[in-house]
Picture (tube, rainbow over the protein chains, first blue to last red):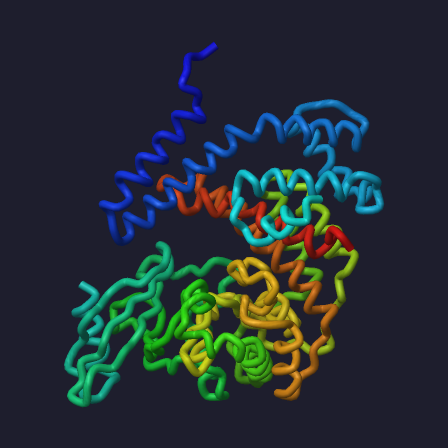
Length: 125
Length: 328
């Protein structure tokens, strides 16, 4: 077991330092790149916070959908193959719900400000 | 330096020109550059833009039409009344500037978010969806026999190409897989008419002024194909920049776009437009994957490219909204 602070806390402290103390000092193209860098650290922080829970839920749904076990990567490869072969499609019970839930969990990490995501989040489905 | 070569070049083809000033690089990757400058002239400075591939970068990527074709298309468009910069000079070997062309600089805004948010465009925005329809109708009406040599792509070939691109990424994405199946199942077949297709006509590639569309830029993906492709691409959610209820670039409705297109004497096929919107959404998603791959494999480790890779999920939610809308 590793010591603390946790990676989430460490990453967040760097992002906050860059945002609050460094960003006001920089302008032009370097300021743009710094914003990208801060966005990356924020994304990593969100992923470290959310990934474990969303992967577990995704694996649970995929096991039910495919009737097999495996890692989240293995199960996604299996699903992709079945869709490609036409064995699974939108008529398959649970597929649409699974894809929606998985995609919403990805947006929560990648782009929580994306307008389509905020709209769908508002539906509460 | 490039100033000296530009000065020598303009003196040859622009009568009265005495040199250049204010030369600045605008954008572009290793293979294609854009520069702005003024031609110094006794009657006053003439705003100009240079688009070029430096020497040694002559080979265009397979999908690109090439700078020579781009210059020809912009000039044809200009002559036909499509808002387009006038091409002033196509580079020749004596210019010592590589391959490309010099065009008139059109003043206005290209940054999509500014056009969608800034007050100075408030009165212009409601006009744009219809105007874009009119511009596209003119563009699709450019005479086939005057066009440069261009690649030709049917919907079926395009699906196959995107599938190859997607598989080469080895990036298992169930939503993309589903979209590929949907596209194959809804392939509309060859279009009744094959026309010039701009290929990247969207908010971000248009110069907008108070009076509306002033210039259509970035013709490098021009090809021959189904004219409905351009109408679908301009509606892809990624080019609405947050204004998701206004499908045409965040400006207005499909109805306005279609009305402008039909008023200019051409016919819209809404189901084909929808097909190309789905195709376009997947196309941008796969391009995000390409960015991820280039980030991994190229030595410069660009953070921007890395983050564009993480935007593929935006196209996944948009594909789901198109193909399996919730609450319906």
